[in-house]
Length: 305
Image 1 (cartoon, rainbow, N blue to C red):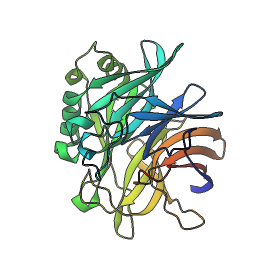
Image 2: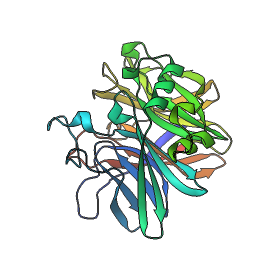
Image 3: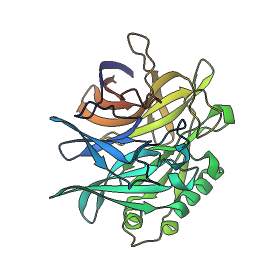
């Protein structure tokens, strides 16, 4: 497997303001819904432009959150976006990364005749079950990506080799997760099974850790991974490299580092499947710059088998 970045562009709303900290992406209507992990709005990226979509009510009067303003602990940290059918209709579920109660929520975003609508669901008991199934403490949860594999919702926890923690995943039944999101099943009743662990190697001694996942039609999964030098699941650190990994079940099939021609290291945090070909796929990727003043980048990535 090899991969190349075909194009790079800035993501900005139609008013010129930057799309902040893009952390996940999923198909939505005639475009893509891009999560901002430090804001109450997502970005609806469509052929005619980019518009804000509210996915959370203001928190203590704040619509955006940052360490500089002392509000980082309030942010929802939506790091996962996945299309899930709710009540028979298409929707996107955004899921927090865990580690704090503020990050143990889901926002279910639906497209209705009057426009996008959202519902927020607290899922603390489910996150507790996920941490237990992964065999880690709650403060080590950093759930950064998910994809649908048949009837399973496979949820990926970002590892940290500095803390001797490999990336891992667990499976949830899609029907049970959807029931929990609509309130017909208690979150603690959702089954969490099939822990898998992924050793993706390192870049210059910094471990590669999963940042998102996308399922391929044949059941294999492409993972994005970043080598970020940080001691825990909350703080940002320098990113020394990124890569794509191809997995099938428990088997790691291939890892290829993703280098930009100009040497820029793009911290990919969201993957979308744009096109499938016999000899590979084209991905849509979004990049978290870890700087609210810098517009998130969107990449077109070609993967060759």
